[in-house]
Image (tube, rainbow, N blue to C red; front, side):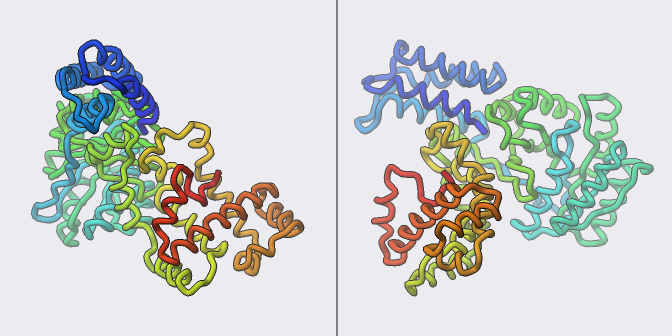
Amino acid sequence: MFDNLSERLSATVKRLRGQARLTEDNIKDTLREVRMALLEADVALPVVREFIDTVREKAVGEDVLHSLSPGQVLVKIVNDELVHVMGEVNEGLDLKVQPPAVVLVAGLQGAGKTTTVGKLSRRLKEHENKKIMVVSCDIYRPAAIEQLRTLAGEVGVTFFPSSAEQDPIAIAGAALGEARKQHIDVLLVDTAGRLHVDDDMMAEIKRVHAALDPVETLFVVDSMTGQDAANSAQAFNKTLPLTGVILTKTDGDARGGAALSVRHVTGKPIKFIGTGEKSEALEPFYPDRVASRILGMGDVLSLVEEAEQKIDKQQADKLVGKLKKGKGFDMDDLKSQLQQMMNMGGMGSLLDKLPGMGKLPQGIKNQANDSEVKRMIAIIDSMTGKERRFPDIIKGSRKRRIASGSGAQVQDVNRLLKQHLQMKKMMKKFSKGGMAKMMRGMKGKMPPGMPF
């Protein structure tokens, strides 16, 4: 997400280096580039105009501090305005009501509503320890009911059954009654998708809303539709009292126009973003962190939070203990590290959040994909137990057998062995308390173990 915008903005601020002040003249070309970058990112035109006017007003005549270049001052101003446009702070769900708290989910057909309900139910269950029930009021697409039933089973929440023969308002009322009986904390209600803002369908969802009186009414929208996402959210907001927006498919959106337009156009906060297909791929939307990622400064806070949630602490402690005892870092350990990385969203997700990684050449970014990580794991799986424990014994004939067994080439096996050796040396330094040495060794280099 934001790849194109990040690249353009990073390039434009470089041109201001060496200037003593930000003036109307030396900032004019830069602002034109910023404007073009925002328009190419499919940001709504009114948002672009206001954004550029605000940045110009704040930047012109701004004295440059001794330690900063004009480019850095402009980055700070652009960063602050990006945060402002996207809503300043993360606004979570307001569930402080008498249970069950009802959350109504609406949106256009194909936006990913049902999948989002599954993701949200998992997040509320695991992160907020809530007892969840989900129900589908989509009688027009029977597959949606079965899809939600399957998702509920996968994430371990209660599913309230419904069928295409029932009335949506009756389904909603029955689900609310059952949620009260079962002392459910949160009832998530999936509604029928609309192909467009259809009068009859909008009248129906208004009746569902009136029957439930939800504490949250969330609009799910496909981020890849750009400023159309903001426009459809605005149209829904005229019919329903929306409390927030969830952007889906952000992992496939290189532009980011929807994220920059929704808050300004609708006045409603983006509460979550969908970052992949898996049920855990739903993140709270933090404007300051997203702005940092747009400007190529990474998102270390989200990375740390993700690591705390998803890294197997027992496995990590076991590895540290093993290294302290002087035992080597073997192939099983490398496989474990690769699997942990996949649990955190894969290589692309990690690169997106690391500072400075946005400036990597596109060729390197393309190589840093999950298929390469999976290939590495497949190669390790093709080794015998003895080979995984003692990689030094892997020579010619063994390499050919391992390559054949994993569908790889011998050079792929050689590359993996070399990366393992590099990581083994790093781990050895770490076990002796040489963290400073390890960091110095990494300076200017990509971390060993990356699949390229």
